[in-house]
Length: 235
Length: 322
Image (tube, rainbow over all chains, first blue to last red):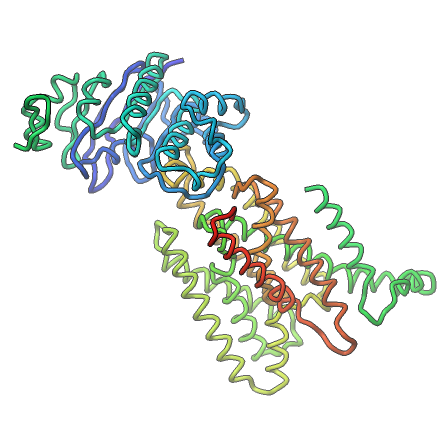
């Protein structure tokens, strides 16, 4: 099953101006922008957090009307924070991402796929920040939701794991999921994104394929950088 | 879990059978043989309300403690931080000075009004978003104010007798409570426990972070506000009838989470069970006070609970399971 995500008038007062967006299944959309641009706010709005206004639909159905159990099958969200609210075992933490009645085997499967089974029975507060990040990503992947909304999934990960996670998210999209994530590494965004949304000052300044969205003009005006001789320079 | 159910059953039966150190165990069967009507009155009007009060008061303390700890993501939080306990105690003492301790229902109503005022103050201070830190700080401030108010009321007691009555009541007691008083405490307690149990999945998901829980469709703002309200009503009503009993709301959930692999929400019903067991055990223990002396139940729970609390802090300090 696949589903389109549509946002109508999605906004957060003072942080994100109203926007209308549609995301097709099978695609990876990267949200890029400077710090404080509104990437997290857009993800919050798309995830239907109460702080946001507007209408978010998945497969034509408004998610605000879903029960929590049903919502877990449609949408999975990874927040930007890697802080530990409660020191659960990694395995139990991942299992909390599953809807009631879902097979527990999917917890082991997703932990194995992220090479995290070795610390699955350790508490989150006993893990390194990178290991904890992988467990949190595993929690988001575990329910195999139709829509994956991830706030900086590559944060705190070494280069190899950043690539592994982005490849995994690409595979999820290839399997029919709609993947939307925020990222700071513009080269990774260009390489792994099917579509890039550039946000600045709470509004969308560009939305399109990587080469268009990350044009030299946009890099200069939004990020204040340029790509010269395979490295970044200030403009 | 099953051993705790057995223990609960044994403690309820013991609570009905044991009167005090000076009354032999066989006195109740003897009384049933010689005067069944009187024996029935002793069981239904003296010992059963006491045992059931311990059952429900302990349960609401345990369950609300588990809910509050899950809500504040803090294993050292207790229902007292809603300010309801302090508000109820102040309200009850205030009313007792006006109408005297001979009117238990007046005192209970005073307690409920006190808890309600503390709750309204807390919600006003916390604001519409009812952020966790604001709720916590407002609760601490209200507890401090009500504590000071109660101390002032004691200092200004109209007579030494009034002082002693108020002091004894504040220390907590389940003795000589009637069936209507039991109902006054038990019905709000049961309502609060049922609400907490319904919130268990949301409280478990809150362990993933507020934004993640909200993305899953849980209304975290309402959850925070309603849990504080349910705690204030459930615990406030029980405090109004029995006085303040500390530490069970702190210790019960910590033990309960050992049974639920640390899950904060799933620990709510086990915490209610363990709270009941602890308060029933404490209530039986106070019956073994020397003749003509009484040990307030709140003092006993504090004597046992405070070292446990310190042990818990020490374990957390050394980063072992909370």
